[in-house]
Amino acid sequence: MGLIEQKQHFSVNLLDWYMINRRDLPWRRHNNPYFTWVSEIMLQQTRVDTVIPYFNRFIGNFPTVQALAEAPEEDVLKNWEGLGYYSRARNLQAAARQVMELHGGEIPQDKQAVFALKGVGPYTAGAILSIAFNQPQPAVDGNVMRVLSRYFLIDEDIMKGSTRVLMEELAGELIPEGRARDFNQALMELGALVCTPKAPHCLTCPVMEQCSGRIAGRELTLPVKTKAKPPRPEQRLVAIVEGRGAHRGRVLVRQRPESGLLARMWELPHVLAEPPAKAGKKAASLADEPAMALLAGSLWAEGFAARPEGLATHAEHVFSHIVWQLQVYKCTEQSQSSELPLIAAEARAAYDAQAATTDAATTAPVGQSASTFSTSDQAERKLTDDVEVLGDAPQIHIGKGDQLTYRWIGPEDMDKMAFPNIFLKLLSSYFAGVYDDIKE
Image 1 (cartoon, one colour):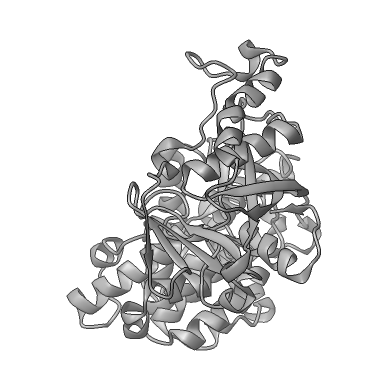
Image 2: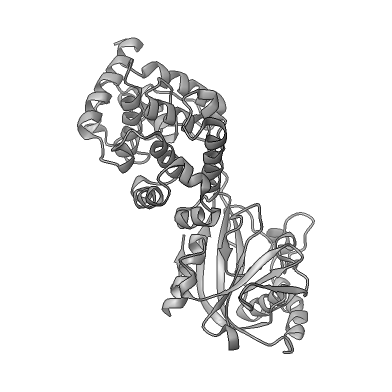
């Protein structure tokens, strides 16, 4: 069988299989371009089973492009809470505002106009145009590249831009006339359910007879993919500061800066404990005594007096490029007249005492001593002692240095504020009175 016949075999048999085996997914029940768009953004680097409840809740609260465009960002982030990669939510809302301003609230059908929307890349543009509007546009993601690499025995590295171009051209050639909507979803479905990364189900595959990778015994070695650089580990000390007096029953949280990682989301105060370890290596834990001294000093530098009482739990949160390894300490609010300035002054000495026992050559970046610590992440959290109280004092504090917002919250506030999943779980555990090691 030649290449033309192999392509035809693939398209015909894949479509026949899909029409019988396709999953009943909420965004497939209505040919609504907005639903398609939201689902495709949510599905980026996230499993279908995880996305379904988030999609249903999101559409329930923001049923139209206009509703999303006009919603407060805090509400959008709260509805995205736990799904991760929060820039997707911000970009989605920014793009909804573009649609309102430039296209009268109607998702455009022109390729360049769709591609110009915030957060929409080649794959998402192809998915919207093909699924929502049945246009013969390829939608090539990791699942699709894996399927095509195996079926056509393509040895090119799928991490290269030239390989993506090759795959897009090939996928475009495979789309049967008038069937772009079904074909692209069929291709995604095959990669998700059958032609899986580590254990492809070749015996149930509708195109196995002409799969060149299977015939060559290469189904487990394809696709060729350069290994991604492992995330860099960071050891961070986290404070669960319990309030006293007017703040009794509440915990101190802060809002992250306007831009950067997890922008404008709420979190527990934390500080970098060690210079970043090498990628792929585990960051060294800090002993409790110097860790608590460093944490107290960090909080004092931010304008808050708190005494760490002891280790509460460990936690871990994985980003694409960083792993936060968290030592979480229960702390108690103190008066500003306490001896905490002394603790802050001793933090450097306590830290250096432990750091001196480590091998600086293997733990410190070039030009940085292993004993260097950031009370800090200076650009992220250095504040003056001048703290302004706003709103229902003493609930909200804004540090004038970096305009970071601090707030004392109770469990009733958790439904109103958006937290990264790791801090959501830590706070939920705290208010429930249960501490467990948490990994994200």
